[in-house]
Image 1 (tube, rainbow, N blue to C red):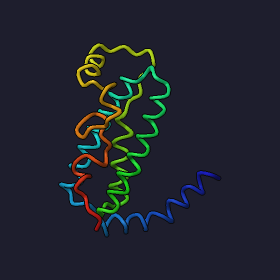
Image 2: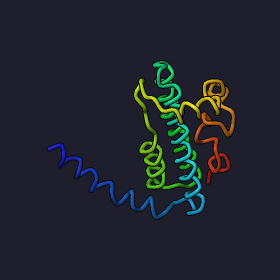
Image 3: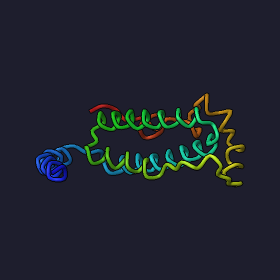
Image 4: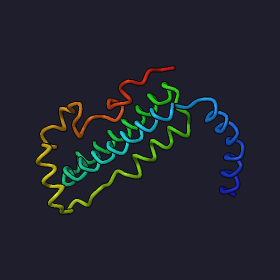
Length: 147
């Protein structure tokens, strides 16, 4: 019965989503740049998750920040004219690419990258261009203007 209700909801919402997708959309080059940024952001979040994997409080905070970053980026996209499909694709690109290592994970290359990028020291500052830079502060999000 639940599957039927879900299918019915999708059937009823599909025309509205399709109309929304056709009426609004970010230009293809802008959306492509946003997707590239989203994938880089996911790589940076994965590095942060690795570097702080043994700190339970930090890993919980990183998850909250990820959720907040995605919500704010989605609002920025929406205000800039993105449609629902574009916003969903961007969120999916981030969520499918962020990795969460086990607390006891060992990777010499990632350990070296944590030291080289001074992740532990630079994270609290969230310097632009660093691994902790929020998604919505990165280009092209930082240049998007409401329509």
